[in-house]
Length: 357
Image 1: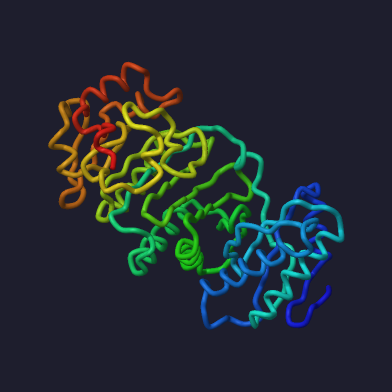
Image 2: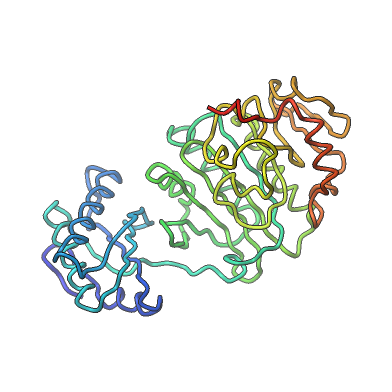
């Protein structure tokens, strides 16, 4: 442990993390000594300034820090470009001094992180997903806090240990404040991820969201029937019926980092149309799925609903579900014929390139 004054640097923990990662960079965490008056925004700005100063220290030959992100205790920085022990020491020294010059004290060490199990990172077993387009952004505090509380309740219902993403690392959250931590993450980062992992079985639930109000809920359990998994996704859709402009549920082959990971190519619009929460989704669909939450504006344009059940689940919101769910959700997914028939049924309600702004 060394100190440049008010900021202590735990070189040992950082060097061990660097070694464990094969010297291909590492993650450091700055933990402030006291809660600062400027809140998270000032803390993130101070760490960004310190990282920028350290990156330019010594005219090259030092490491490069990037992507500051809130952790449970402070701020994570990803360190790249290891040139040797001197490059690490120089970068950390400049980083700590710049924090002190801004009036900060505290500690810098390796970011406490959890390496997810292999099945969580690389498994391709089908999982049920609920894709939600909320009517309001998740930067509006009361709305966001309520949503985070209910999203945490949904994810935690299957048990397991809570984990929150801090930048590109995952941290276990054993506190009773998981929902508050998720809301804090969303308030300060474009996206946030919460996962509950079973410590013994390859079973997990996961919620991903971005600030503009797009969200994805997923349930993974290779031992479960697809019917049980899609029930979990339906629960997520129904929980958001009062606050979503559109939602759908389907089986997916992997964890989603946005709507673009919803499994199949779109029929008419480019995939980048799914990158943001467009008001268009309140009246048009990007594609047809096994189970959908639609508005009256959607239904007014649908050509044929004979193969679908329609249930009003909230004033102006309708759960539209394929009568033959197995044709959509059983292993192998929908056949080309099933998909073509569904797209024909919903034809005028599907988004076209001219609808995009």
